[in-house]
Length: 87
Image (cartoon, rainbow, N blue to C red; front, side, top):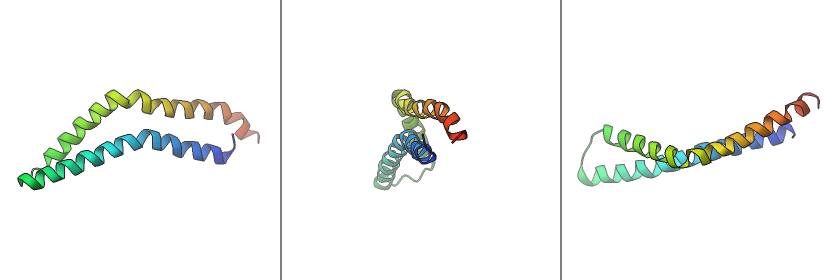
């Protein structure tokens, strides 16, 4: 594993870990904003609570899948450390 592959793997692992959460938060935030605009409710706790609940559901359902990619990257990185140190 070269340093370039380590860097690319880190970005892929970050995308696998953060991507689903960011996508869910985007959809929930947009839906909440539209709902608040339609009903003219200007309460700041509504988006926070809905995003918190959405993240709880996401981490319960997809958490193991998201962490599997990070685990795969970490194991590959630990195996590659001797080669990276000794060139």
